[in-house]
Image 1: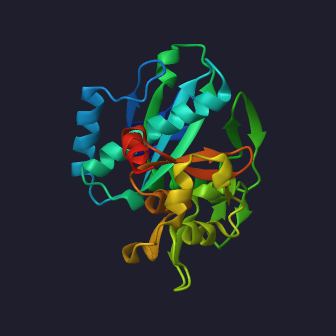
Image 2: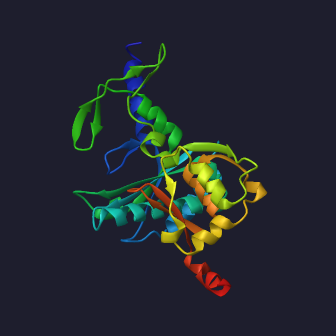
Image 3: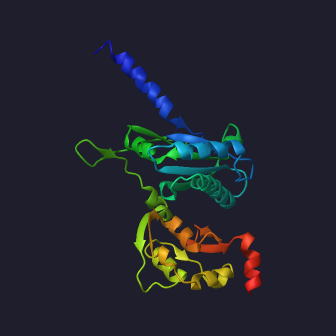
Length: 275
């Protein structure tokens, strides 16, 4: 056994190096691919788009993926949060177009990172194996790196052989990432009724149509399609996007916890013609 120990240790180290990569943000994650963006851009390069399409078609078995959008610390934080989200959505849409199931994709944004190195390294989206990430977080070490310092983590035992870190879940950090499976009551007739029902107990509210995009009132009055009476499992935010339809962008106000649907620019002419 003593003879084999050095070989086993070396094998474990090589496996760990291949399976995990350290991001400039300081987290150790199971990153499958990192797509980089130009300054103030959410447009993928042809090279990254091709790589993401290949990944979508070759990943087997299908795994839950976390798409983490980043920006550097140039500019206002509010805009950076919006840009990081747009970058993650671009990667998500590319994966979906290539055939990857929407329900297996989770979005996260981490804007405004400072770096001693190249800022271009922070203008990216990491495609992370969510299952491997969960396993990594479940392996509790006496000390865990957090930002620029070291903090002690006291693990909680949940079984004879299992422990978990006493940290909030993704859904607790961001209720919009909560996975929902919902069947709307028969009394739910309109998109507005469905959105109100969807957001109940979420802590988020639908924005007042009077102070939102003028087309929002029209959307809310439309009948709920029968095919959308049952949704899930998918995140609450994705359910919102389904109900708003592809003609609208979901607008998130995290300060006031308000959600709204804003008509996409390419459909503005249609709205104008109907008035």
